[in-house]
Image (tube, rainbow, N blue to C red; front, side):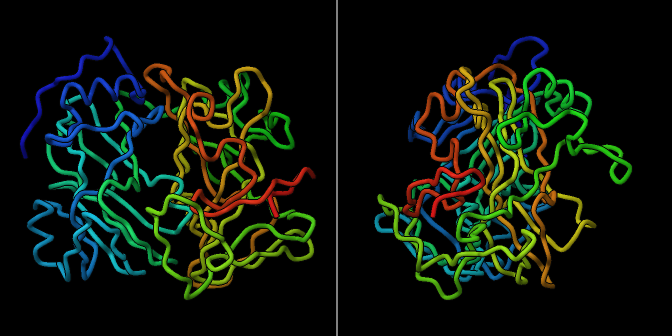
Length: 400
């Protein structure tokens, strides 16, 4: 595999996720590039870069990892069809894996690694995405020193979607050195600058769901579900079967009713999830990510139940954070699917884990405060592709 020369000058002893100003330098230095095409400034987020679809999508008979091969070598043996993504948007069918070369390529220095994740709006549509690279045995990880093409696997699960060239479905972030905070570091930071709130008040440090006798080292805190519901008992949404396709390139949001049905709580603030159905629910806690941290929702211990959450779960610095203290955190939209059997969940039940990473420096711009961010102070689980109604004022409710 070709090796890149270190091109990006970082401060001595730097550790953490690279902020937007260093991502911009990485683009200027050719560490991230798109050949002869410029990379739009608006694709820079506080701690990540939106990655754009290229000109072609390959429909596959199965997913794969290249391991000791290049992606192209494995791809040739698994192609069903080829779709031209230039011009009008093209339809991607449900339950079919597609592989799309991304426009952005990387030439990482030896000390810098990459990690990718779906954009929040992608996850809320139940569109499964992950990046693969040449000679890799892991998804969504870009090895230090990697130089070459990035490929995005895309699998629409609930809705057929239309996509085209330049649409961004996922994000890349770059890191150097040790980034992840330990449980002790999370507790100390929460004491100083609260990271998690319930009912507008900081969660007491001794009540944070961190390591315990079941999991001696968690390196993260757990989020739970809000199943109290609104005045009509609604707690969220479930994707409809046989919904129409959704054009992700459409400039205006659409009515949600053809795509989503309401989910109502049962007595006792609980609900039984139907197997293999996709739900959008809201976290009970509100999250606040200060400027020097980033956060990601990561896999919950699989022994805790037949439940999958958070297809997209990266929080940029500034999510739920306000320097002037006008609000305390933003709740998280949780993408949830039960696997093989009906599964009971209850209000306040932990369902996913938040890990925290230190930023190398504070970003030049913050989520929400400096950008036109879609999900700051959200009380609605539906993504930006759907029309939203006015938020109610009663505590514990989200828009009707």
